Length: 167
Length: 391
Image (tube, rainbow over all chains, first blue to last red; front, side):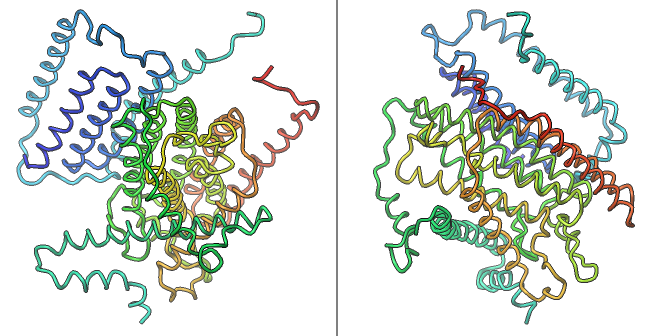
């Protein structure tokens, strides 16, 4: 737990909090990007190069852009007068806390199950990740690919022009 | 002697750092390299802007800038002083913080890309395992700065320009990545240093550059198209089409912030040309084995400047596309061909050494391209102009 870790953690949490608390929706989206970047830097600090760069490529390069486009194209970019807080924020808080508790519990439990590791963490190259994805984990990879293809086809069908006879 | 000349910058850095206490040496050495990159590329930018203004002038039957200094060579200095002394205007309704951050984010992200480019033998600032992935990750984050600039200006032209720019950059990023993936498949590494090493071999005095293979040639053409679009250069310069959108996403920027956008655009061109050089044109390796004595950095920067000249030449030659043509071109033409190129590269890998792979891979690509051109010409209807959107 170095100084860099605390710095990055503070950045990530600040970005996340700003994404929830700011009034303007586009500002929220941009703060969410800061949180994404903080997470990527945390991965890099753990020497997980592939995960870190993939996080930047996917979340900052694609997801953040998608979010701001969605905000702009749905005419929701104007801030409502009565604030952005939902009336049932308490329910949301309970659900979020529940999810966090389950995830935290799972992570803490897994530390006990895994063989106890001493010494420095093993260095993992991109080559090893590629071999693992194409070997042992090829089925999950293919299922994800299928899911994404289905989503893509669905999006194209939604966006497709209506047939001429429908006029 | 040749060794010394080849490594002169590395040796120079080593010599300079030698004066400092040992504890400081690694940090200062990195700072020195960064300072050189941050100084060198803006200097190249000034040179290129002059070259572009002169060259475009000649292409358009003009003389170009010729008043500042002999033959106008001091024009970049005058431009720099002008942009520094101009008033920095921020619109009243603009979003101040985001408006300020946008050019900063752009220039920082673009500069980060230079960190992984091998600019000569042993001349890579950060030699990491996944440097190609790093480059694309950083490149993807420039899109956000374009959006920030367009949105925060509160100007319809800025916003439209930003939307166009982001849509275009996302569309052409897919072929950009996929055409580079073919190189990764053949060289078996994401490290740019290893990709250059793989190309730095010679048979009969000729280099093993990837552009001299069927899939590499097709890949390079697709890569060049995608980079032109990715850097918003003509003929893909719709985001800043001055006849429609004033100046696109940086309409509301003036003074030095405008200069930063200008700088960012050219730096992006440098860095993406450098990446193309590394991936397809053999990076810092010499074009013939008997030219191996010329310092490696001369080859890298020579190839870089040739790419810039091609960019300028294309800008002076081709007219601008229309928005729907741009999108159709990306998704219906470039993307399928990059997919085919991936298949071709895989075939090249599995056919092994010998002449068979040259014949098979060339034939597949030739059939695909000629067939596409033939079908395209056959189905094209020449007649009265029809308007799709302006009925």
